[in-house]
Image 1 (cartoon, rainbow, N blue to C red):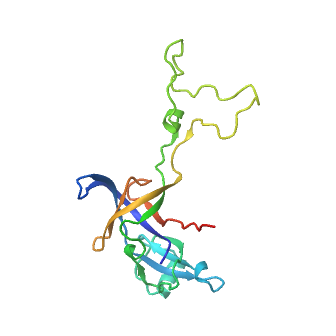
Image 2: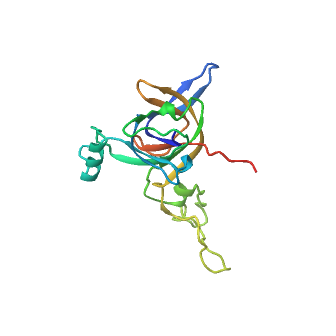
Length: 213
């Protein structure tokens, strides 16, 4: 099947296990994805990619509307994504791909999303710096970064931790575990905290297989 899946982030909660311990989980809406296009190159299954549609939109543009009309799809998706195919048998156009057909309960995955944007932030909030001492005449330098250069080479080096835009970047959280999945409500719970804000779109990706040489 496909190598990843698109879900929508929900609330965080906790689940009690049989041994009495509780684990933090994030509830996510994992609705089935609609197959809109299949791209195959060099007549090889490894190079095959599948285009999937997700979300809803009131009125799509003319190009998307004509494409959906050919596939006899009545819904209006908001976004499209493309994943590689990891099986020899490819899904049919217009069919739906469910979450449980891609992942299994207990499987370890990576989650990719855009972190929350926090605007312009100082070094304490952005990089976790400590405050400077309040005494010895430093009345307004408490949250300042301090010296940023050196005598040699006499310039500020590239990559120096300084104040700036914080958040709103693509973040990949690795080695998360799928705890449960309900086929009726399409609610999946993933262990731990996921990047981004509530109702944001996330990509759940299978762990990459590394071959030993």
